[in-house]
Every structure is written in structure tokens, then in C-alpha cells.
Length: 197
Image 1 (cartoon, rainbow, N blue to C red):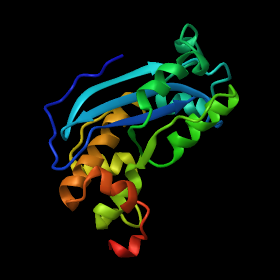
Image 2: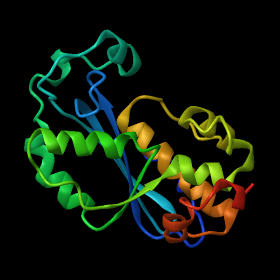
Image 3: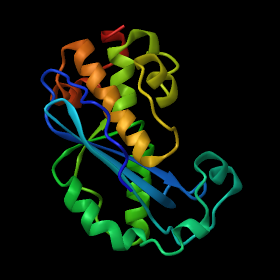
């Protein structure tokens, strides 16, 4: 379901990219029950939405407490194997932002479960970017909630669409603060922290 779009947030030298976030049913990273997307173009948020996905597995009380999604909510939703072609086409060859490597691992495990190819994307970790762009977050506090509070990003945490939007806005803020482009961060996010602090 599409989320409302806020006033555009602009950043210099920001190529088009898409941000992605997932929520899971249990401690198996591949048990994706929701996936969210936020597309950005010319340094601004363009579109933001999420889909429920039926993980065809059990839901833990711990995960339900985090995101509020229950088995009944996804009973009529498509499985990962049914959504895969559309997701793969959406991400193919694009810069895809996720906050930490969790979402990359989750999509890889969901693909492995159904014997599907890995998603073909250029992954960019917004947590790694933030740790290098904002020195106060180099050693701790780089979670999406604390970064969003610092950057004045209003969002409802643990909704995949909202988290995707926030991760994308973190990258735009880092581009603005650092003068490095999104394309630069594809490389610079992997440079040692000591080169930035």
C-alpha cells in the first residue's frame, strides 16, 4: 500500500536509486512478510509503497511485537516466489539502498528457499554511509531510529515502506553533508572508518 509522499527532499549529485526494507515473520531472515520500496530521482523522494508477502511459515511473538504483522494478515498475500519476477525487474541493475546488510541477507535467503537467482542490484548500505558521513555515528547509534531522529526524518519504524523511505533519506542527507555522490558512496562506504573520522 502506497505511503503519502512528503515534500521533496533535494540533494546535490544524487542519481536515481531505490531503497528497500523487509520485515520477517520469525528469526529466519528469509521469512519475509513485508517488503517496502522508496524510489528517488534528482535528489527527491518520488514514490513509496509496500507489499505484504506470505512467507508460508510461522510467525514469532517477538517479530509480531516489532512490526505488528500476523499470519492472518498475509494469508491471501502472494509468496516470495510469486512476487520475485516483479521485484527482480524493479531492482535489476539499479542502486538499491538498504539499512545494514540484513535486507540483502533476507532477500538472498528467500531466493535460496525457492531456488531463484539472487536479485541483480548494486547494494548500498545506508548504515555504512551514515557511519562515514556523520562522525558522531561512527562507533554507535547508527540505527535507523536514532539517525532519523538526528536528521529530523519523521517515520513509523518497522513498517517496511516507512523504513525504506527513511533509509533513502539518510543517504540523501549523507550526500548533502559529505559532498560525495550516491555513486561515490558505492565505493566509499567500504573504505575504513579511520579515513573519515
